Amino acid sequence: MKIQNKNFQKQILAAVAYCLPFIFVLTPWYRFLLFCLGVLLGIFLLIFDEESLFQFYQDDSQQPLADLENNRQEGPSKAKFIVTRSTLFLLTLIPLSLFVVTSTGSAIGSGFTFGIMLGLLVEMWLLKNNAELFGRRYLNQLAVELSEKQINLLVVGSSIFFAVLNLWVVLR
Image (cartoon, rainbow, N blue to C red; front, side, top):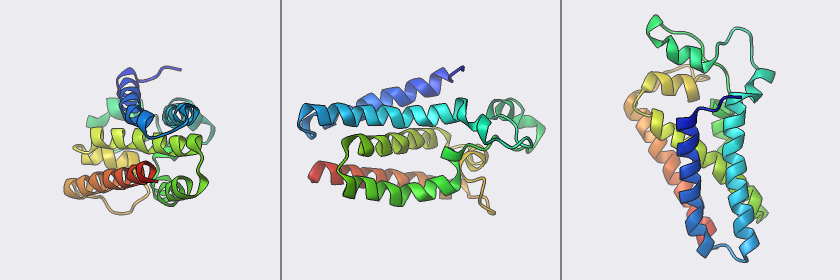
C-alpha cells in the first residue's frame, strides 16, 4: 500500500496542530489522549479508504484516481468511487457529527468524527481552486456542476460548521 506522501503529511500536520489546543480543554488527561487517537483514526480511515478499502466496493467501470490525474488532458473520464468522498457521505456526516458531538460525550467518538471532518476539509481546501477535480472527487453524485464560487462557498460553509462544532466542545 503506497500512501500519497504529500497529502498524508499535510493531514497529519493538520491533525497535530488541531489537537494541541485541546490539551487545555479536555480533562482528565486520558480524555485528551482518546480524543487525539480518535482524530488520527478518522484521518487514517480516509487514507485507508482511498488507498485500499475502495477495492472491495469498486465498480469495474471506474478507474483509479491516479490514472484520472495522469490522464486529465485526455478528456472526461470516471474517477474511482470512494465512499468517504461521496456526496451522500458528506451530507450524512452533518447530522452524524451533530449527534456524536452533542449527545454521546465520547472523546474517541468526537475525535473520530472531527478527524474525518478535518481530513475532508484539508482535502477540500487543497482542491477548491480546481472545480473540475473537486466536482469529480466530492460532487460526482450531483446532476449539476458547481461553479468555482459555489465550491468556495461550500468549503467556507463546511469550515464554519466545523468551527461551530469545535466551539461547542470547548464551551461545554
